[in-house]
Amino acid sequence: MFSKSFLATATLALSLTGGADAFWRQVCGIVNTGRVDPIIAPNVVSSHVHKLAGGSNINITSDFNSMRQSSCTSCEVQADKSGYWTPQLYYQHIDGTFEEVPNDSMTVYYLGRGDVPNIKPFPPGFQMLSGNMFARHYDNTTMTWGNKTFPPRPVADRVSFVCLNDGNTIPDANYMKNTNCPYGLRAQIQLQSCWDGVNTYLPNNAHVDYLSQIDNGACSPKYPVQLPHLFFEVLYSVASINQDGGKFTFSYGDTTGFGFHGDFLNGWDPAVLASSINQCISIQQDASGTIEDCLPLTYVENYDMTRTCSETSKGGRIPPIVNETVQGHIGTSLPGCNPVVGGPVNPPYGYNDCPASAPTPTLNSYPAQTPWVMYTPTPSAAAGLSGWAYANCYSDGISGARTLTGATTTSSNNMTMEVCQAFCAGKGYVFSGVVSHPWTHI
Image (cartoon, rainbow, N blue to C red; front, side, top):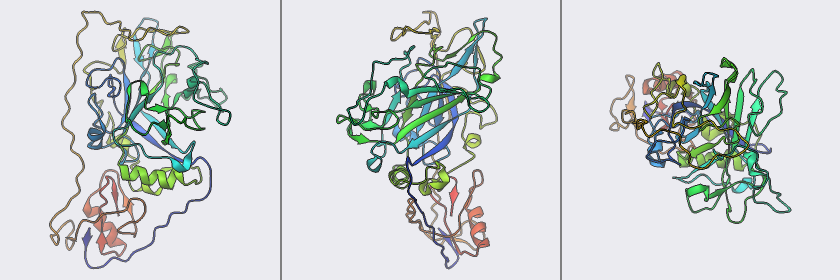
């Protein structure tokens, strides 16, 4: 905190009104594209290409601690250094070459579904994935848990596709039924919301389960802990591809879309996540979904994340983590040599079509990430603008109990104490404070 003598305060108030299905959503830009999957393929190169969003430290070795040390995140909520990823979509032309289908972001929903008042935050170290990359048909036999009160539903319903056109007249489907989409093909995936309460990860996702209706319902007794319901939307610009009779295929060789999947590696600031769930999900409110309507998130929001923290934020494409070509036109083989396999028969588990002579992929090197550090000079020392001195470091209540409760200002690319001090001085204040979350001053 920086001061002259005294600060006049104003009151911030949060009003939560009744409603149903409280939630928030945020846009997350892409931080890298490559064969990276620290959940299924930790410390090694993944079998296929993903579009990766979230914390800038995403890599083959990522865990909760390393993600929290990310220098930035491509998501709007800067307290969220989590990793989110889904498979890349390609177009295979009739000459056998593959072309990347453009996609520069994803939308992540945090939904209040199921036992809403008892939803718990994701614990540190938590990770999960939803979907089966080897699915090539609709499975109507594998069902969620359910009973007479909470009926089951086919697990295959976790995946859906929306072909966007004028008026949005094309019904959703569980596969890529239609790719003639003027405004894009949107892939959607529902993630598990029921947790065993013990394990942060188990092979085959044995630590989590779906709600009885996947996007709502109840948890089975084996998975009694309710988590926020995650839902991903990924928009692919299929209309920008010069289609010549070829076919769209995901990076793992799927031309159907039944095998679409999504991954989540928790990297949240625990206090911010807990406060946001408590104020914006557990307490029912108007279901606008905007970050501005969730007070704990507004203090750590950055609208400019796709420019300041993305794979194109340095004025050009950041190389993929794995040293290989995965973007643009990439030749006649999918990275990882995944064969293109349609349905209805599911391909064998663990296939790999790379010849023995194929070179072993290497990793590109990146400079070490430097986490954001709060400025803490000696008390009474001159700091910032002339006439201002450092007072002290105070603990701030992100849930609304603010140390300073006057006017606020934010900036995505010019967050300095001088900017903060000038703003506060212009409002007649004699104290200013720099919140210890990136992008925000009060």
